[in-house]
Image 1: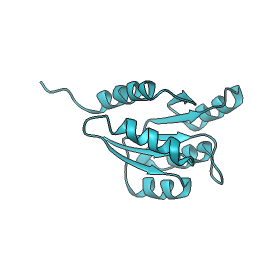
Image 2: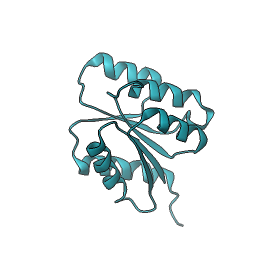
Image 3: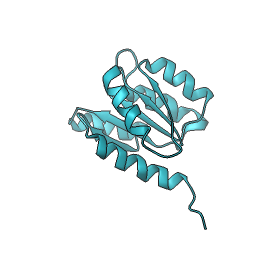
Image 4: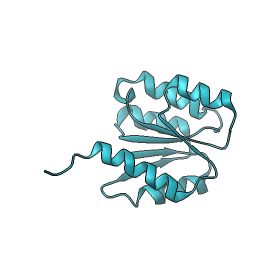
Length: 127
């Protein structure tokens, strides 16, 4: 499972990457620069994207819009991390195609549980 995390705060990004590392067969990529992350994602498919809402230059909303415009990521699950509880923020994120939200500050165990759910949906069960 390839996971791309995007957060301009290096500490938050490191925590997200550490949580992702707890998943079996997970390969994680982290970016503090949303433009670099978008370039990476346009060239390399991901199974899941975790993006912060509030970032300089390109916000999480814009990242999602650009990813959804790419045929490669039209259905990729995208989790938005946000400290905003504003209805307008969440509504706009849903309009552009966010899959899920996690409120910041987040609990690593909550993130891990969500990631396991997405991983289980991607990895076929052995029969």
